[in-house]
Length: 178
Image (cartoon, rainbow, N blue to C red; front, top):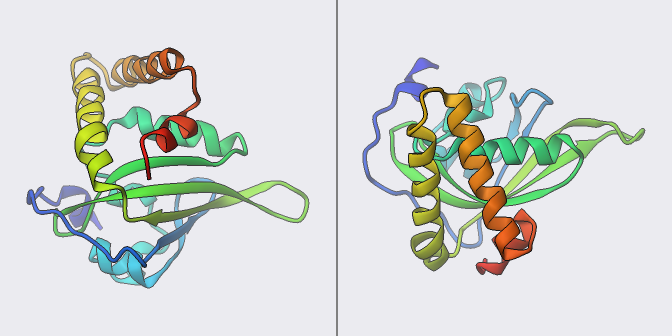
């Protein structure tokens, strides 16, 4: 499993069909409990190397961590979130997705895990808006002496952007075009 976390970035981008949806489910701690065929194909994995492992094995190292903090804060609070995410395949290639992550609840209404559907993102939005924004947030995170301070600073930058735009994160994502 160490291979995934240490895969060098290739600079190559992977793509998937507009009709395909990447699906995964996790437990409360973010360990994968289910993945579909598209997840495995795009990530370059086999099921046994995905199930039971942390979902962050596909995290691209240049994704701003504040986006994941926002994601976890939102879904653990019982709400859904939509976000553009850059992931890393096993071989070090990257792939962009437009993710919809929701809490999964049992009959009693308690959160028992999380479900994520990812679609092909709007390429123009990724190129023109998300890449520059995420690069800025990532650089802000790297400019601090500790990861915790970096995440706090980039999270504050996102909150400031949303306040300026007078909208929530999901509303901002959809305002860009999907």
